[in-house]
Image (cartoon, rainbow, N blue to C red; front, top):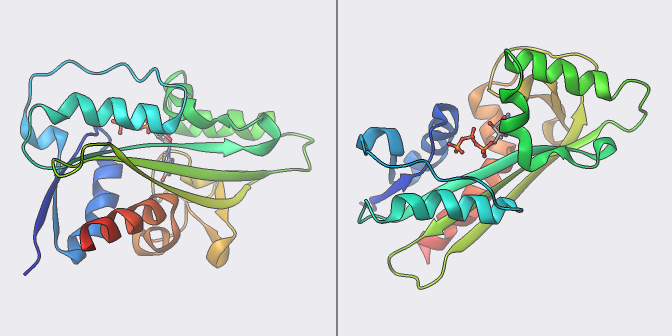
Length: 197
Ligand code: ITT
């Protein structure tokens, strides 16, 4: 049976869970960086694109493992806020006591805004020992920002996002419902195809 081992460069346990939920049924074994107990410096995510940051994270792990390494850089882009918080999604949240507070602040910034369009973006960088170059896979999920947070499923900004696809509030969505349509799912589908060729 097909079994492909991949290491995911992340400290975000929710991301790791989502990669496993989606990829394990396709015959992948996914180790998270934290499973390896490495003593390594944390890379500075100072790229100006998701691609650059995903590459920085994957590259920082590559020399420690013989398996293909992947990293996901992702964010929530709100149209009326010029795509903010986008690349800064994790950093923006870290300036608040909780994700709930960060969610409320984004909602506050949209007060009196008719346009609540938003999208989640995920870019996966793959460093495959069989490939000379880094490979990138991008997924996008389109929707809008709710008037108030709903539910507490998922993680990060999920409770303020409503996706057009399946008409779904992500804070109320079960894992398998979000996994079927998420930005990460769309990027992962391409990654799975790469290994199928
Ligand atoms: P790693 O860098 O260790 O992977 P991180 O959480 O810092 O973990 P990012 O730098 O890619 O990851 O930041 C992405 C942020 O965007 C993440 O922390 C969430 O706040 C948000 N985000 C990304 N995907 C999300 C999702 O599916 N649902 C809700 N929020 C998400």
